[in-house]
Amino acid sequence: MSPAATILLLAVCACVAIYGIVKMRRERILDGMVPRERADFVPAPPPLPIRTVASDPPPLPQPPPVLPPASCGEIPDDLPSATELSERDGIRYVLPLRWSLSYALTAAQWRGVNGIRERHKKLFPDWDKCSCPMRCKAKDLDEQWNYDHARHTKIFIGATFICGGCHWLKSPGFRIATWRKPMPALHKPPHIISCLGWTQERVDKLRQRDLRESRENQTAISHIQQQIQQGKAIALASPIERIPPTDLKELVRPGQIMVVPWRVDLTRLDAYGYSPEEIRRFEKRMYDFAAKRMRTLD
Ligand SMILES: [Zn+2]
Ligand SMILES: [Zn+2]
Image (cartoon, rainbow, N blue to C red; front, side, top):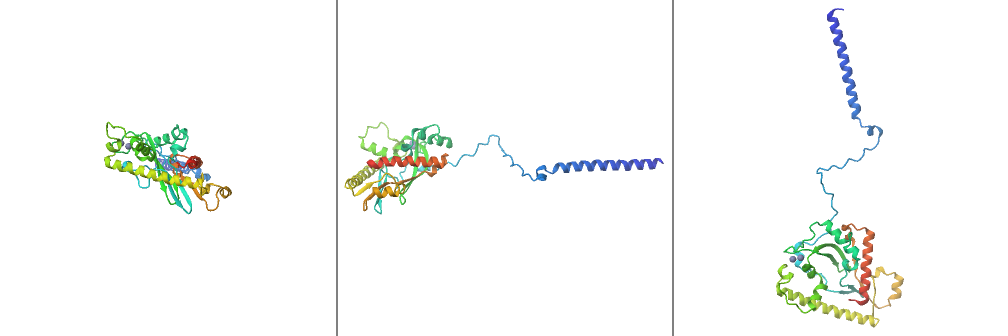
């Protein structure tokens, strides 16, 4: 074989060898790129969560609504001043005074380690600042309610920590207790003036309104108590739909006026992580508390 033919033969052999190696590598790469799962029709596992920042906080549950800061010194028109009474179709509806979670729940349910106060603090890290102009120290968890007068239903909408001065202003029971006592000599203006900016004239008007409404309520309650004593009316411990119809038939005589408490709706407590079952238990406690109030109608 001539040297030229030998070189040509070697070159051809080299080309075949290189082609073989390249083809084998390509097949291996392609083989590796076919996912085993797809070949076996096994669904791919869900992608792992991607965290862009190592210290991403977990998402917070939907916080309950809080009142806007401007409302702290205001008294909404529909805020009941005391036990509220209304009548429709021969039924008298009573919205008991102090009918709230802080009175109806147990101490553990209200201020225990897993109580509503502690749950609120976890949801709102800056809970201890009141929304009043001087951002006073907030200590009292104030419940916020809507009053559905058409359905006689008190609806829980949220809560917020407020300072003692704002809590006093928002609580008709506290205000009336203060107004009834002789006014002590004050060394400095009260919170309602110094922080909330009320004038003395406005405070006096509130005092007059509260005392007038309290007297009117007392008169209306005395009238109902008289009707109950005369047998013209009967006080029921629960809203009508919560009383079995057979019991209702036995309790109420034809023509008798039924005096019943309002309904309560605590659905929004789910924002604090309560289950529907826990919410039903809390509603029952509220109705038990209302039943006690219905005995004395205070
Ligand atoms: Zn304040
Ligand atoms: Zn305040």
